[in-house]
Length: 489
Image (tube, rainbow, N blue to C red; front, side):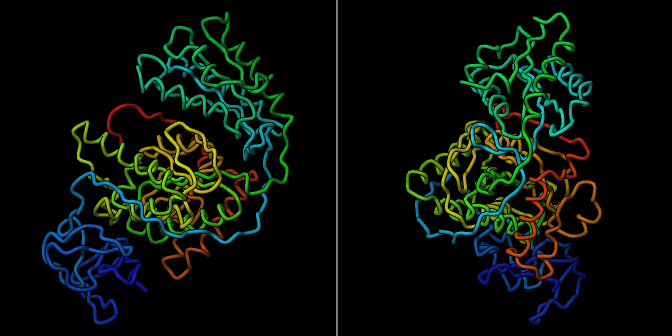
């Protein structure tokens, strides 16, 4: 099998391996030229202006006549999206059959949430103390003992010289991270003269546990490193009281993310993650789907699954607000995908979006979250955030995801604050980048069903949630990025 037609209505198929010109493709079809793996081949003639269909949905229009067996890409396919458009609520039935809840071994917190790690986090309120935060993490790494899994700093450049929404975003994300259940103890590190004051941050935190969260203002300390070390020792003693225990999967919140996508993303890894997501939700757990710009053009596949019209209005408003932000800044709404996506076989935003939303499976949408908000409702949630890998993975963590599933066809080494499972869309990537990749979804291209792959992925996720470190964790790749004003794809 070297060519895959995803949906019976499709007039293009995806090359599962490189195709040579003249290769017989079955059904009397012959490749008219060399086609790379992940790229599209026309199954029948497509006239100029006619819709090109993949996933059973239009992914653009032919910019010229396309012959059967011809490579379909940027030279003969263009987006069919021309304006903001307004979604219409057309509800679809999408209830899942219940599934008996599995267990993992995690850390049960006093507020009833569960952590899959028991770490000490150092959060700078302002970029000026990034160096101090990193020094504290490095010099106190020995506190990772017993049930304490590690000491980590999360530098960022903000917290001062910001105004209005940018300032609010920084404050909100940092406060949400401070409350994350994977952190057994949190040291908040301020300078003392920044815009994001201790008083502001404490108001954002609300009624927080002062045994678990400590705040150090460096200008107030004679020796900030010595005082920080003392506070970290106290936090380690507090975090050390927690031990792993069996916890129901219904306590899991998992972020769904893709990056460095290729033409197989929507065929192998993303559908497998969708099957995982459906299983998780059916067990009472929570999945969070973000990357709003990569919902553009695929709204009908997603928004009709909103559990009621009120949720639909919230979700549609989230998508339209993102489009309006592009327009307000004079940027084209549909100027996506990236060069790497195109090299991997993705041509238009519709194609990228239809593949992207596969990660959300088929469950009903139960919640819509603003950027920086924490999940409140079990089930599938939509989160406002860009496609940018670091920003959206940080937002997923801040929303409460204890684990992030990250699909990629090109590969990427980064890690979110939460453990980040890298899922290869193709086996060659998995085998070539073993230092980066945790899971191979490539077998789906060789006949494994998405459901079978999703079941394998569930086993991997439960092992990671029970303590096995991901590749990015082993490499020490842990970072955050915060959204700021302007257009971010």
